[in-house]
Length: 123
Image (cartoon, rainbow, N blue to C red; front, side):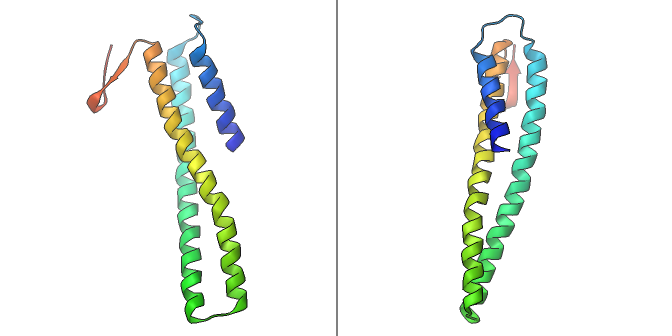
């Protein structure tokens, strides 16, 4: 998924650099909104998984305090080791979606729209 996001964002960045008048920005904006929705959904699912995994880790840690055993310590270590990539991937998704919003704003500028406060656009 990380490679897909990076490749897609690089594609959009390349489009934004081009001065080609034949690019249908309205169509590209529609496609971009679909991709934003797709990645935002992926981000939400990973948020749920990451938070659940973190809660499981904390609960296991608290249970280990009252019922210490070597196996539970190993479980906590395994959970903490796995939690790091979950958090890293979630932040990649979060930052990428935020960057995609900025790309969308730049696309709007290409078609002569500028963002005005309160979500209103002017032509």
